Image (tube, rainbow, N blue to C red; front, side, top):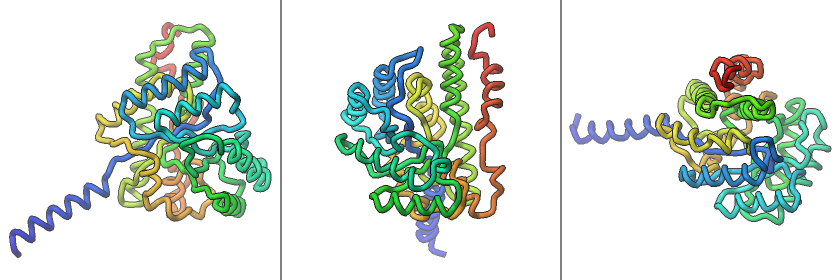
Length: 306
């Protein structure tokens, strides 16, 4: 065989292999604008997250808005995200479970949020269900998908689920109780916990898709993100991950076909794996459990002299 052909074939094979193992991930934040906490005001939190993302040269982030929290001050916080070049999206109005309130009530709630976001710039037509509850069963799930599509929305799915919200609550609770917090250990706990979840869901993707898709990371606009999101980004890059925009991530082929399963609570990768017969019990990282995190948090020594 011609040596030039062999070299060309090797180059093509290298490119294909590289593409199949691309480590790319986008950042998305739920529940903005989150109220004040003992650690920081909502205004401070928003400013800290924006500053950290800009410092880390994150190309874009998608902020899923809990529209029922919008008032004059919080509207300004959302405008700050948009002015910084980031984007907003629909996370419902009252943040209720679609599985509990039913199709019609949820559709009305999502439309109410749609109207509330009309006056803002940099709004993208993505919708994300609170708690990742897509509906009580597959029939309801498909009906809501159809209604949201009629309204012009695409599914703002995640591929990496985690309990970042609970980790943040542990830190905030410690501050409320006036305990001494070792913020370096808190940072490491946050970063390592989320990184483990990312690798876990990427492994599931490689097993089921035979490739690493463009991932979408679930985060929340919380105190832990304000404190440590820059550290997480730096850690990801040190491990070979590239931070991409959510718009890029949602162009992955996994966005084109909605998995016909009831399991969506762990994200799109887990739903695809479930549709291929992988047991649902294998599709949830151990850290997606409050008791597990309580024990791990204590063991990590985040609280000094606990």
